Image (cartoon, rainbow, N blue to C red; front, side, top):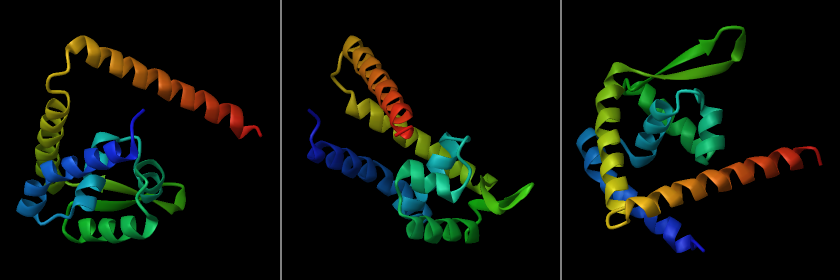
Length: 145
């Protein structure tokens, strides 16, 4: 069973990988996480998505999004037909940070799976896909209750 310590260590080491980029750009880790989330998941476009899917508290999302907008990494756009919703769009300035972030993520994954045979990695990915499917099924069945 994966322990809570494992998850904590995973995030801690990921943040260590990101630290040089954060220092180089002056972007805090949470802001980098938001940029990477928006660029890597274009189906999610607003602050509520970041709160729900990434699990970052709403007040932190608000603070970091505002900073990213002020620094030119994000733009806000009103959603046509729904004035209450605002899409967050990554700018050209964010592109360079995102590319570096993708390289960091790639290196992190390579480090994480170093020494793991490709067959084991494939099994791990299959197990993750199956457990996600099980979670989805559970959620659908329990929404009715």
